[in-house]
Image 1 (cartoon, helix red, strand yellow):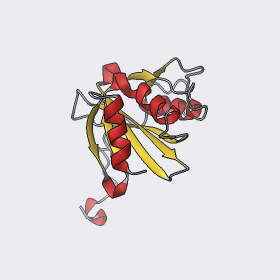
Image 2: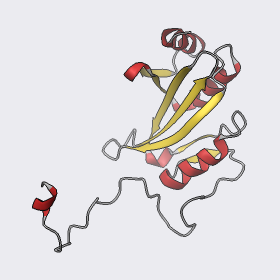
Image 3: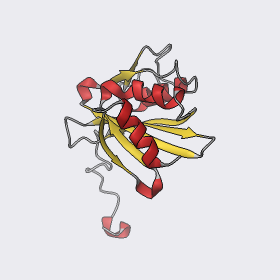
Length: 164
């Protein structure tokens, strides 16, 4: 099985779902429409493609692009043929909600909770969506790029010592 075969199979089953595809370092990466995300993941697992292992779920934040500000990334693995796929979907911050895949992969439970905790992405239908790392009263999602990396009011450091 090859990346080309997997991409053709997805395009055949979901003709209008794939927005973009690439193969950085031989790793098939596709960007799909949010509405088709769960259907594609279900197909990848239950069809003859056999992507039965969910490696990771994570979020991403691009604050400069308001239409595609928040993204979700899934990494799936076909253990028999040793092929991996990365699936991305992007949406606005106001629309940061996708369907849960805990009914497909039980390991998605804590991964989705972590993604919610750090990025604020909600998972419709999740059995217990609450924070797991941060305190419940934190009031923000720490991996969103909303704050400056450094305190601009600090006077106790010399930037030339840091190569700036």
